[in-house]
Image 1 (cartoon, helix red, strand yellow):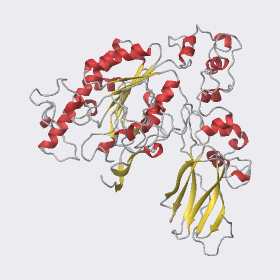
Image 2 (cartoon, rainbow, N blue to C red; image 1 turned 45 degrees about the horizontal axis):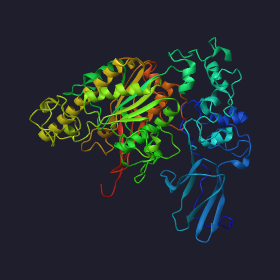
Image 3 (cartoon, rainbow, N blue to C red; image 1 turned 30 degrees about the horizontal axis):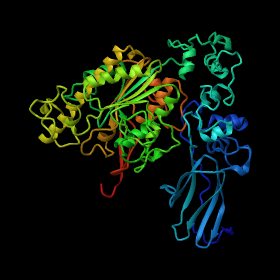
Image 4 (cartoon, one colour; image 1 turned 45 degrees about the vertical axis):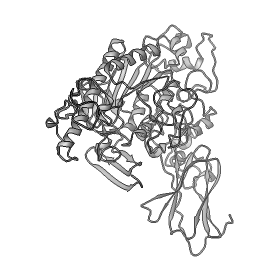
Length: 612
């Protein structure tokens, strides 16, 4: 492309460089919550100490250079356009890409509404050209730099790993069972595994224990042996090393009880005509969030977003995808990306926990893609009865052995058809049959309150009564799960979460962005969790992965925009710090967005998808 002087008649105005800053979040690799990587700050300490300064005099503050991963001591490295160019009927500009970073180009005619001219893509250090036809409307343009990619399960991005010399494809480059992010945080060498004292415990693994608490008596490698138990969880340090689990955080199990198509309807949430004693007991022993929302009112996008701690527009997984089911461990790679799936460079909760020594399991179905990024050790069928649920938990505990376990206890109810999922639980009338559209539940249709978004008509009442009946069946199965955990002696060391993939599966709910489609139950109980607490601050499934990582002592991922709810769960706060609103989105049928601040629920319906 030939470079010319700026023409007298300008077809386009080029907006001065705008680098999109990451959201301000406190995480292990952004300890001061300034939106700049701690790795960048370690590489550029002078610039990091003066964030408002401009060390290289290029007009870009040190903080903005850090957010964009440019060199604060090199004026030529700033993320900016390299001049306006003309060639034939095209105008354009170039800018410098960086390895592993994702840049997009936005266009606007009024500096208010922005559209994507060139979508985010992985860059390689060098020039990137952006061309605009002269016939296009006069406009403004900006470059947005997004978070770098992360191809493994540590919290370091690929660019950070490149700078540190670690392998971006390995969570533990030197194989000493100390994650690369942990080695950076504690100041050990992630490239070298040694055992100078010859006790078969790597030096940096022992340093992890030594440096985790400056106030204890463990100050030397000789204080750490295969027989010691630093975190007091009953598992020796030697066994923790063999299992690959953390020696500095007591082992905890996690059970995520995940229903389908259940709105915020439970006895403990005040739903009239609905009895859920088992879930009510969980709420009494833990923390119940009254204003919890999913990220999408569609099954697959909701699950894929929740398990990656990101939004559907970040995963690019907008639609329901082929369901692999529960056949685990995987044989080969059965992934099917015909309808999309999450990006490869986006670690899932299952990948993260499996790498850290957890035994992982799932029941019912997965409904996510690519399946290889959900590598469960074991799968179980649909828990249609309390007896089946009990057998699954018994087998789970046995299969996990000495390892902590994580299980997505999926159940296909109260998904439609309400009676076709859970049968013979004593909740259906003997004469109503087990198929059809209604009049089968023993929930009294005249004793319920019809939500104000539906007409109060007999057919609607019966649909909702059937829906409540299915929830009562779920409650019976959930009670069996809790009893089995207790009988196996692991309930006191298991964090239990009860939630649903999205809201009720009726008109103006599922597939829509209305609150009946996005509001879900969300209850958390277990060791270290406050009891009988109700929180009305808005939270969402975006917070599930950050909360679990924080609870389990795993460094948080800076590119996950959710919040750890640990301060709330421990009883130390009744607000989610730094959270003003939550966002949910629908894409597959009716394209829309919703924002809630806890008081108001704002909806923007963008368009109806063709054929919906």
